[in-house]
Length: 130
Image (cartoon, rainbow, N blue to C red; front, side, top):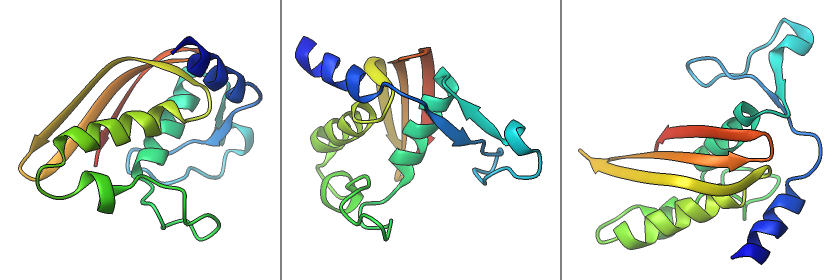
């Protein structure tokens, strides 16, 4: 586990810069450099959220990237596989060192995930309705 954590930490090194998202999840424009977040726990948390919301096959530049909803998350009897797939997706995000806590709640056919993560820049909590 320590080796994997070191590999994740090394892979996460470098500049992280993301365009801010508004409350609806849309990109923010019009304020130049103020429209970006960089090198902070919030930056990594936003990267995790956007990676969780990206469906596998959805991004035309790399159809192999994305969260495997169709194969590992949706459907009956997937509770054991969806938590593993989501945790792996979080851990493979640039800047994430580890998961401190993780919870998923499936209610009324909606899956909500909340994770507290250690990042290169500090701790952050991510929540996403999937």
